[in-house]
Length: 288
Image 1: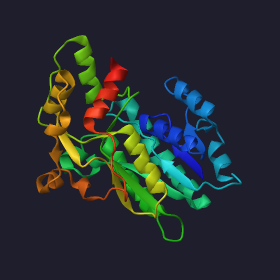
Image 2: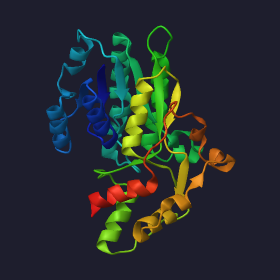
Image 3: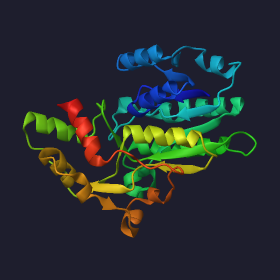
């Protein structure tokens, strides 16, 4: 199969591309050759990925004119920011809307199946939605998707993610902060120790995405665990090596109300294989 993927130098995209290449697929990635992405681009090229530089003037027209159409187009690119500064407005909107629109146009012309990343935060309460430009850009992108979504053009699937973690994850995430505080021997101050997290190991998330591309199209699917854990309990698990499974919170009606994105189904026959305790141990090897 032939894939076109944006966001391939991000944590999720990088691992997805590696898996697709190892399974014998032909994968092209759209990326900027920034200083932060050069190492991952080089690794993907060595594995056989075709790199398309989005900063080249005619990169878009080259893709459009490709003689062999793409079977699958996956838009994962995003510029994440909890609280953006003025310099981040352009990259946030460009990743979500400009590049996202180009990916839709490519998919329409090539008659490809199209997939794009959503976040559970889009479905939370209004005040939370308005709190970040990143989430707002995701919501705005829905209008572009609906513009392109017609039965005679192509299949579109939105994939909703919660929190992803795993080996090699260097992002500014809570689990990494916990590991760093443990390594430094300092206490981590928690803003909300009762906050609930839904954590799914990276290899399971990648497997879920691959399975979606191999099964009949559905409008919205969720790739996440059905278990939650309190931040305070997660901190205890890492620091004291407590088995986290005994602290997991199962989905019930209260959680469904708190996290409306849970109403969307996961891919058929897909279940995460990596327990939270196993995932934490794998990350500890990386962070030790």
